[in-house]
Image (spheres, rainbow, N blue to C red):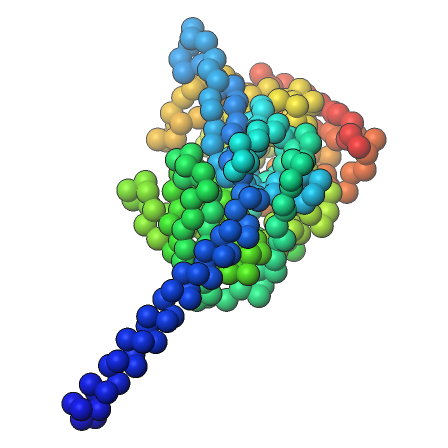
Length: 347
């Protein structure tokens, strides 16, 4: 290619660049304007165990984001934002603050469903899209409340698709979308939008050495959220628990190889209705901060907790099959004794 020909192409390249950049910015601006009213801040409060013996329990504030997906007031967010919340509120961009209740949560997929006490008068829900149609390289944007700063937009691409426990023979696989869009503390539960304004993911976590955004974030794929929370009866245990096996199980004289040590429970949850007791004594075991002294769940509806880390699918399926009026039966190890607990499933 001659120098003269290169110089002739340069003005054309500059014109095309100047045209494409504003068009892309305008498209993003229009997409943001279309969906911004549906994105909310999720605020929570929960009671925490005393930091040390002899001290009083504390109330801890929580913060996340979410998105309104229905006219009747359903909001998608991240499970870790609300799993053990005693109370939750949803704050809209126009300043409305409405109390909400958790009606469904899947800790493994890190996605939860809230229901507002009453939908806002000017509710503008957004559609939950088909995440299977999203491909690596597609442009997306995230709206949320990093560090509590609402209506914050960040843009990027789908960087990858990640299947949880892909090698496991699970009937209900969990998929995450990886993105390079900036995500920080407070973005948990933020919706990931296509340029067409459809929700295709709910922000779950980031991988970071600094604690801030490093361009490596993960969002629960919308089809996973739909299957777990919208296409079947949602379930919320209200439990934060830890699987104990091996030496730890032996140390607490567990009568079987594995159990779930209860760390925290949420008020007004199934765990609370069952009468499960959370941990009360803070301790450090093998470098991990734990709450000891709580119940250890041994089985649910006769299905034992196993050593297969995180494979609670049989238990979850059994709970999902329960109908309003049916009994949920849980056996726990409490102060050296096996105790049977039960509660009736509410409509």
